[in-house]
Image (cartoon, rainbow, N blue to C red; front, side):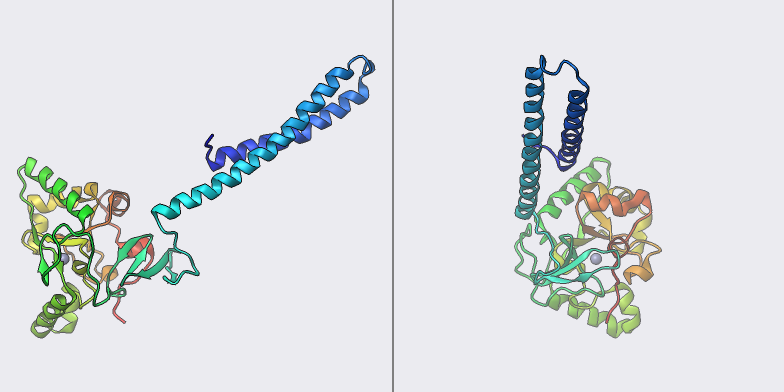
Length: 289
Ligand SMILES: [Zn+2]
């Protein structure tokens, strides 16, 4: 029989109460019963039932412990529990989330984190991408799960006569380095930092992000831009650099840049249209050191 932790706790409490109250009731009743000799058989039966209840309570407690252990094992097989003493442990965020670094990237609750504070290693290359990475840039070298959701959102957009397409997908560390340097030479470091990531700090290196259509702020006012802003979360995508959150993300509003985080987090970050950033949600900074 499988019972969740709360049910077992309630059962334990009920049995604990019974195992205290019944002997008490039994003793009081026995003390005041004048015909106790004639009812000795009933009292013996009651005593056996009480003993059984006490024993069964012990059994329930064992089940509880077993189930709790099993639950932890089950989770371990599907999702690693970040441990404070693990080699991957970096520290806790201001909101109490555990920050880890593994396989050349930072993670919070298994969500890959990359911003101005947290960089991907130079040799970080995403695994399990739809198109195998063989080049410095690749439009469809997107994480398999994200690609599947991309097809869904694209097809749903087509169904209502909207045309969305990926204009920029995966970019390697080296490619991003060259791109940033080009912008830095053109506009200066301060300006370049508002719209372009330094090498290692771009989500495009993660395989979990891509840019749509014109890669231009005018995208927000198009039918496609408006629809994406309102519906992307239903497919697990977020507007990673929302309007009004420039100081938090460190980037200007990018209506075209989608990041895949999965349905659960996307819905929370969408926040009924009042986008919350990953920085705010997890309690982290986005600042170059
Ligand atoms: Zn982008």
